[in-house]
Length: 466
Image 1 (cartoon, rainbow, N blue to C red):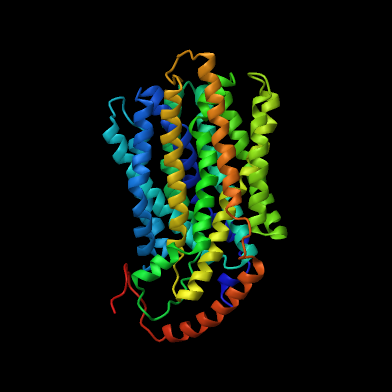
Image 2: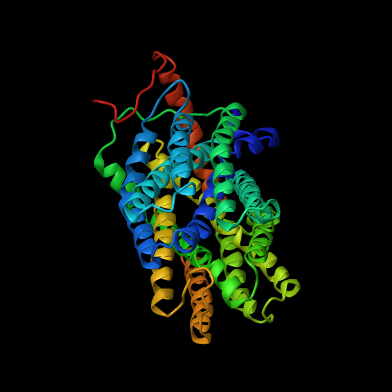
């Protein structure tokens, strides 16, 4: 039996998960702190920031599908997804430098192009790592374990970035300087995380069917009902927390009466409790199935969130455990979707005879990008229309703060519950997936015997000629 079909040892799975440190950290810091940095420190218009963020995401959407198709048709001595992981790192690093070290003279055009470059680099890193993970852990429950571990490692990365932001004032750094220091952390963590994964794990590239893929094959994948359900689930489950993240600092400082440092500590509590949350969700999925675990955690998140308005302003001790609980239950959203996508990817490979895992995960990143674009593109103009002033030192009216409270809660509650509803009645469970894996193993053995007679491949990217 191939090594990829056995239980993945922790000594491999843990370092393999290292790229999630910069990927997850950039995702949160860019969503929570970067728009605030542009609006508060660089004094750019909230509406302009929101529209640029949304425009970048919408224009970047087709890139994920193109990248996915190229990835799935790449063959090299380094591997299929490993090669792309290496390629994505320098793109992301350059964009991080330009955005986090942005001068006061930065305009919206410059912000647009560097955000686009960052989105492209992160797409390559995220698609390649998730697709590689799906091939590294081929079994139903093992995928929950690996994606749970990747999620936990990503949370460690987010916490490290948060530590830089929280500790900044203790070293004499103001809020803007702390953001720049966090940018340096992300720039350094990106190549280190990629290198760690490359050293730790090998990549198993399954043999493809001999026939050349047609356009209809790709359209069939993208139109698969199960994949569409997971797309809308990911969209809603990302939009809820991203909506909350976009106006998090405004809510906790202006409405709840905390300092920026206290708000960051509360966010760190939310994040750190995602580590046990990810592991607990993986265990829960092993008992009741991935889709049921997703529904349970989503319902708990949405029903408990409004309680955050109960503590009086500035009551850190009471609100901290509430943030911890929200962090525990929110940790399962992304990892369950990722694990379920891997199962759908196996079913697609069984029917089409080719690995299309990157294309499958491009649907996931498309949903995540749409959610991030919508969260900032909707909330920032909305708050401005409702009379909220984000500028440093501004004093907002009671009505503006009340509107801020409503905006902070409405999006997450509604969208997270919608996301849970998308997987009601899910049928690709552990029993069905085991049947798929058995059929794939038999066919892979037959194709591998034929491929063994062919010469080794050099680097090749794209669809093979007939």
